[in-house]
Image 1 (cartoon, rainbow, N blue to C red):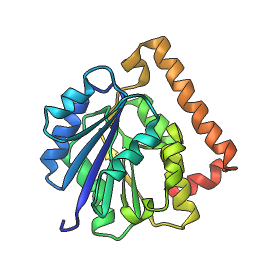
Image 2 (cartoon, helix red, strand yellow; image 1 turned 45 degrees about the vertical axis):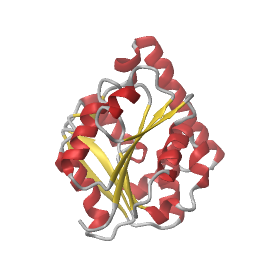
Image 3 (tube, helix red, strand yellow; image 1 turned 30 degrees about the vertical axis):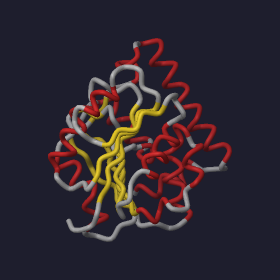
Image 4 (cartoon, rainbow, N blue to C red; image 1 turned 180 degrees about the vertical axis):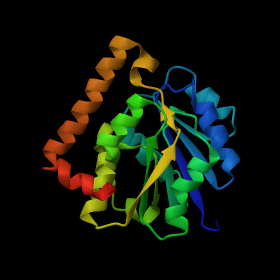
Length: 223
């Protein structure tokens, strides 16, 4: 792979998993730079990332996933951008290479990784809303016109899917077998996790509403 590739990992209180995600990403040996953007983490995420000697940006407060992703983009220079969530479990080098392959070798504009055979709960969530996946690879020029990503919060992935539809981008769905992630309930406890999940769903729903999006229409981009 001769093209320069940057990895951006937006993370909020992911000290339990961020290290393994970085370790696997470095092991893949395909990234020119790895940037972790801690979105106001208070649990040691920043120090854990620094231990792996990658560029780590510690935002002083929680400003939302879309804004954290934008900060990462502004701090990279490569022509291909990869996003991975910081809470992934069972991430393997092959997952990363399969995600990047459509962009590098097959001239797709964007690839979206979908969990299968990870865990029933996360598999089901991605089956019904594959366009919410945080695992993506895309050409940088797709992002150059995406100033609104900063204000999209948990609607960040939906925003990128919307751009793909509006610009008729070539999008590849990539199966990430065995991959899963920690749920919000696991990370924050049952009650706080549930509240956080409802906040996320509301932000996604609100993005749908404000942009007059249609569920069936937006699903077509992931066929």
